[in-house]
Length: 107
Length: 120
Image (cartoon, helix red, strand yellow):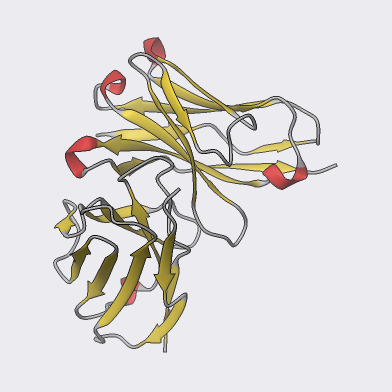
């Protein structure tokens, strides 16, 4: 199985801040990396697929980059509605494992 | 509107059986894989397995193989997740999600989740 390691596990930030979340895979997987946002009591929502492609309807302040084993999710200017937990997921092979999550909290 | 609608919350006793459902609408159900994801209370997401409703081809995570059964009835656009003998450790929220190969197999549509509580 491909292991996905996210960092940090949590972070505190202010509205307007730029934040970056990192996801590292235990083996190379080209660009088969996805990012999801989950708010309390809600289902996850796809933000980014194929490492850097923005899902329809997702604001442009979200962006993704990386290839091989190292990937990042960046929010350019944090908005109040962005405080949530973010998960990466590899879709290169089954089982399509998730990272442990990064909780973004208000400073 | 493309959506997945899951069955309601369940409260069961250890040893009981259970089958929860996920009904797709607004798209060709048979043409997309459906996956199941577990989220234990306060924890992260765990990929359990996927099924292709067109031919019921199924792949399980080794962590869940033998513990659950994933099935589908394409005639009613519904996927299922079932247990033959529940344990307290099965208490969790379970999500179904559509896998889209146009998005390199990302889960682009999610159900609202089914909370399963197993307690004596």
